[in-house]
Length: 230
Image (cartoon, rainbow, N blue to C red; front, side, top):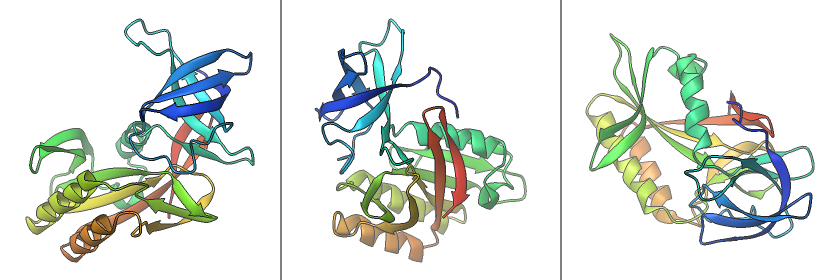
């Protein structure tokens, strides 16, 4: 998935109200960017960090920049926009490029299911059980090489696990897909110290037939692509 508009580098001044970030462009201008990430962004929102913004000229948008990447200035990047994983995954699923799910030809995003919820992707193929795929963006890393989820308490995440377990019990495939939006991690773990309730919900869901799939990403200021299984 390529970014629609070339990204521009900036330095983070501050992130606030979860969805806003004041930034300084290379020419010295200060701008406010939309931050499409409801999580804590632990370790990714320190003042002075190098970041990449996507400009836009959409008259319907109040903010003319969107915060897309953190540049760790060591050759590695983290994607902070939580809408990007689903866009990149949709393209990969339609190309049947994810081996564990390549048998499915029909890809339907945002299908209603459970209790007033929408599954990120419902995959269909004649002769196979439907596959319900819930996607979580992983950006937290507190130890070198280790990606963790979640970065804050997520009651919504625990609810999604329970709904996936219901689908598995009904005979469908139910997949919890963690997409690691960091290029500096080769391991994954649940952050049980941050949200023990979520960790317990995950173990319960696994015991009821929910599958786990962890994918990595290739990230650069040009775009985000689905990479390997972790």
